[in-house]
Length: 232
Ligand SMILES: [Fe+2]
Image (cartoon, rainbow, N blue to C red; front, side, top):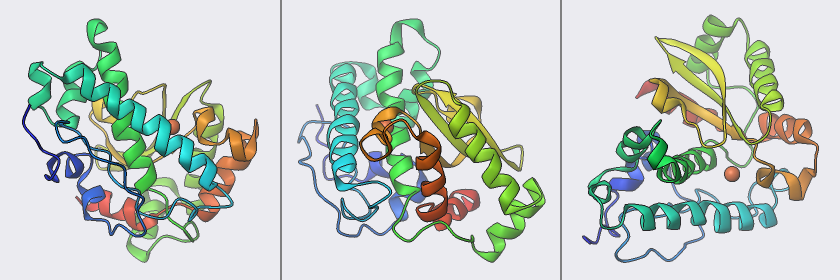
């Protein structure tokens, strides 16, 4: 298999804005020389999101869950035509195919988690920049109205899944997806996401998903990431 470990190709294709972000204090995970897809480093130190998301949660969530999805993906594509596809191509090619459910789930979870990590930052939350704030007011009426929609989506997603801020048809909106589902497969442009699988918050908040969502929205949302995705 072709060695792409030194290429940023797969990394960049997990979202144009993701590849452009500065990587600060990123813990490195060994990149398999033969693997077509690599685990992007976190754009911050593993304790940078504490106390909302602890280093312990990052250790399991990024170091175990995210990495396992990636390892599974690489095993599943190895020796198949999908080994030559980008991550987004694998997601779109496997979406809805009953015989490719495992492939889709692992590929989408790799993408979703990379997108989730990059949508967070230390000292985030608060008010978005002026241009984004104006756009939010236009599409939602107010920042508070948008926040309420995201909170509702994140807290009412039954079981495992994701709450997303997306753009569709030139308008920002909020959607929620179950398990590994990703708005890319519905033709939407993801802007940010909140992981509401229990592994995202249980060590820090136990069953209190609403507290996790509120804390994340208040303190960790990376509005610059949202704006960059909106602009691309
Ligand atoms: Fe997760």
